[in-house]
Image 1 (cartoon, rainbow, N blue to C red):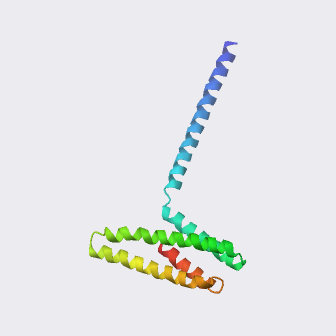
Image 2 (tube, helix red, strand yellow; image 1 turned 135 degrees about the horizontal axis):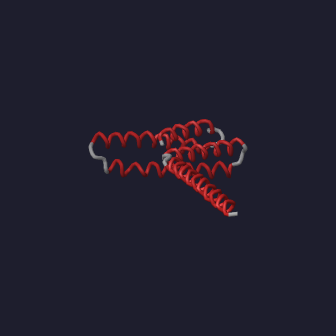
Image 3 (spheres, rainbow, N blue to C red; image 1 turned 60 degrees about the horizontal axis):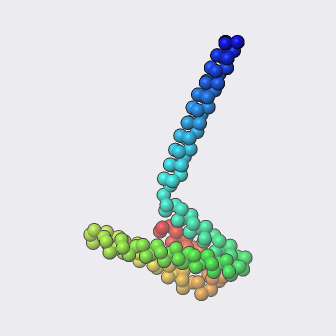
Length: 142
């Protein structure tokens, strides 16, 4: 009888140790997965969101859904405006003239694309291809 009880205790202890080790390994794996997923650059998320909105805009125009197209157009316009605003402090706080010129050139390029989109937006359906092309050019600058 004592041997049976001792065997059960050893079996329970061994099982507990195995399960504890498995739980520890699983927790370690999930922590490393979380660290990898949060280490992804924010830039990728912004670009993916932007491209997603461009695709929704294009789909709205294609389906004659002007509400969806207008909503996405305004969302994209806000993203671009915020992006352009974020460049101003970089220009103002540039360490030297070369860095200031670099940021100014980037801003000028983005503004040119932005104004091309705004000008073409008067006829969104007729200029759909041009607008989508310009949006994709802007996405490449993000």
